[in-house]
Length: 245
Image 1 (cartoon, rainbow, N blue to C red):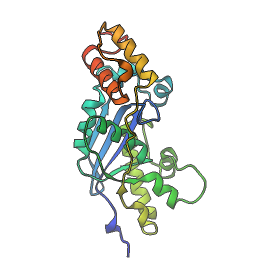
Image 2 (cartoon, rainbow, N blue to C red):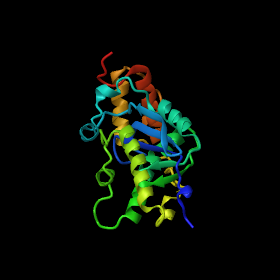
Image 3 (cartoon, rainbow, N blue to C red):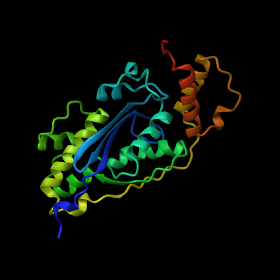
Image 4 (cartoon, rainbow, N blue to C red):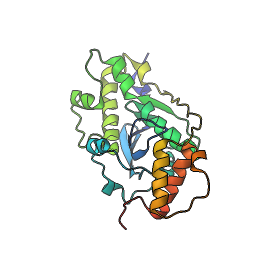
């Protein structure tokens, strides 16, 4: 028989903000996470990431993250390994977790880092346990359980809110729907290397011209990940276009 002691109470709950919806073509701009031990938050992770492309205006409006906030941020090649170290071998948790995990999986793959984890999805739990057609978004779940999320669409705040919502879902539904709360392997297959995108090519050409860098290889022959790494390297060493030093 299912009882409270079967609940998962130790995990890492995380959230990311990105420049768009495609793990292969867009970039992480923020990772936020909380480490939970026996139901209590014990550690926090919160880092901004400087993407190799300008921030879309709709992302600035949604998240409040601006170009100015990212000026001193490192690129994902530095930040993703630190998050993976923070997460260790813990069970991961998130709201619609496969979206966030897919970006981390692609980012880790580009760095040659294996990243296979088990996870719990609070969106899946809420859809399976809460009847009715109302949205099971994190915002609506926070309203349902009177969880204060001081800054929605900022990674660390959403991660903390998700962990608190999970505790409420456990209290209300675990006995009846325990299967929904069990961790499962997080499966995302990184797509086969694709050629450089038109957006990457245009931005890379602009970046090379702006910094007066002579690049001897054929840009058209680069893969997306190679182009991403090259753009990251140039930005790390030289700065972004129109960046003021």
